[in-house]
Length: 169
Image 1 (cartoon, rainbow, N blue to C red):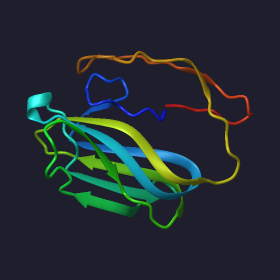
Image 2 (tube, rainbow, N blue to C red):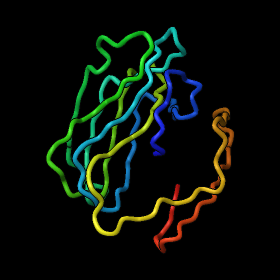
Image 3 (cartoon, rainbow, N blue to C red):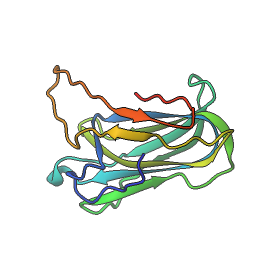
Image 4 (cartoon, helix red, strand yellow):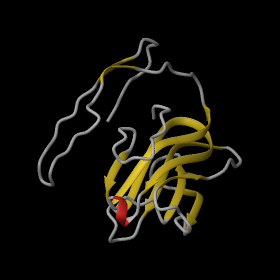
């Protein structure tokens, strides 16, 4: 994530929109202590474009990406939300856990289809060598749109000078 919080508008390029009712995000920390998570969600409701914050969020961690241990799980999160708002889900800081992967699962109702996600922050400390932040030479357009069944090709150019391995997906 880039450290930039999205504004209270679905047109803000810092939002990433998912057309789904169940979202699963897995972050590979490469090895770190993990003690909490913060994720921003946009809520506009049916009258504001049909973008919903989740009804439930579950955070898990794993060493191998196969076997997961629950870290936190909350439901009924939307109760009392204002008509349009940014809902920031936070687990709270807990005892640190050594792990490689952190999984965030967010669920909205089956008939709701848009989930907009903002900055994802994972609290803890890196293990081993601290790597240099990569330099991005080519940024993607803020908005890309395709229809179901069409294809899209995205590319990025990035480099790092500290000798570390650079990969992206």
